[in-house]
Image: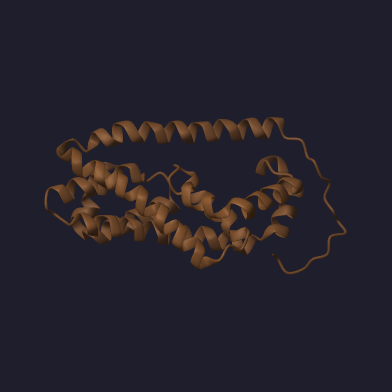
Length: 211
């Protein structure tokens, strides 16, 4: 993976960083914990400027969350409730869970988007409830940009400071990301096994514009 990341950066420069960070949000197996420290290491070697590295990482990351935002907006709360009524066990959601989650996000949406961008896996998925709640696209982008800039700056800065030992960053941050991902998978399996529907499908609910 590191050979692929390095070769893309060598070929495309800062555009390669932006492309990789975009793909990291669409295809999570490409980790930002590897991309940005390596970019910071190359900045330390004079191959590109640190400012360009952080800007490219932030722009690429921001571009990657927009499709997820619109996916949530397209699904909408009512359609998601109908999906929960039919496939709640595998979604680990009941219709009332959707209402509760939507209410929580509407109360804490700003901080959820801002700080969610600093948490592995969550930083991509948080875009979906933002779309479902119809958070202003401008507000969503501003909060995501701030969170993404902090995340990319921390990782790139670590790679820059460690110089040739940038792989040390991956050695520490990578396992943390894997632990978080593993806990999410375990929690999902637990939710599937223990799921109990709280609502029966409401067949009388009229079909109307999603919102």
